[in-house]
Amino acid sequence: MKLESIFQYLNGLLLVEGYPDYPRALNGMQVDGPGEVGHVAVAVDASEATISEAVDRGADLLIVHHGLFWKGLQPVTGRHFQKIRKLIEGQVALYSCHLPLDSHPEVGNCILMARALGLKIEGPFGEHQGVNVGWWGRKEGGVASVALASELELVLKGPVRVIEGGPEVIERIGVVTGAGGSFIEESVGLGLDALITGEVSHAEYLDAVEMGISVLLGGHYATETLGVKAVGAHLEERFGLTWEFLEQPTGF
Image (cartoon, rainbow, N blue to C red):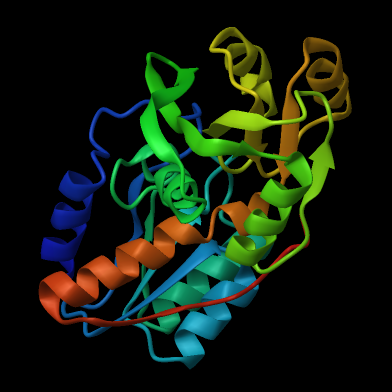
């Protein structure tokens, strides 16, 4: 399939055009590549290790959640040069999608995690620049925080930390993957019993305890692996492209 056609399709599927994001995040094509694409690699981060693996595995296109550019315009030197050079010399195109991939109603990180936990989806929440990046739902019959953490560990295949701030029985649960601590106050205002996210700051830990909501922390990296995998599977089903997930965990 033609690379430009894939870029255009992904922009439409993921609602990239005009979608607000962090000021310096860049959604969409970041590095051009071969005209035709047969094999796609997906990953959380556009790290040097991930790029090297994509080249070694013969990928024509690398799709990531966290792209190359987070600090605005910079000289293409040092490690930035190394990553871009590897992409160009290895003939691997790079496509990035940040907040649109967190919030997407079908292939987004948040909705996929909520469904994997068996939540009955009630609606979006987590307002950022006029749009919602997360989803919330109900756990039928309620669940204890320890039991919910065990379920989340099975989904993420890794450890989960619990901040015990909410009621003993948790029913109304919000999901904002990555660094969702800034949505604790909104979660409380919505009447949620728990928030599932990747990580929070020291101050946000205190917010959760003092505002009366439990927070489950699955790790920034681990909670954001679901969306890129879903995009890879979607491209296979839609266009017959082969794909694979490149695992490069950070431990955070």
